[in-house]
Figure 1 (cartoon, helix red, strand yellow):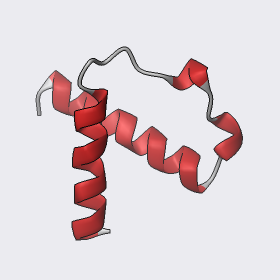
Figure 2 (tube, helix red, strand yellow):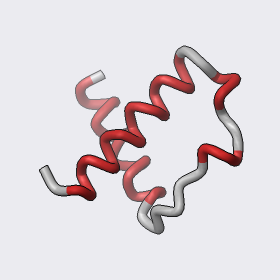
Figure 3 (cartoon, helix red, strand yellow):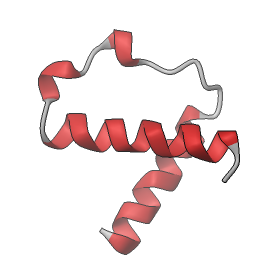
Figure 4 (tube, one colour):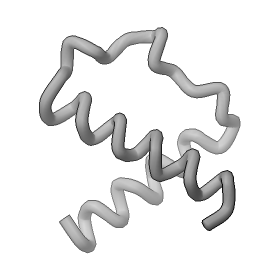
Length: 52
């Protein structure tokens, strides 16, 4: 696993946790400086759709 994949997976886990269990944690402070964030979230949504 590359550092980029690890970061993507950590962000995905946090996103899933917040949206399903702790929406009160969502906010601008949880933003990511990752310039490929949109691409990671699209990939995450695709994976969740196929395997969720």
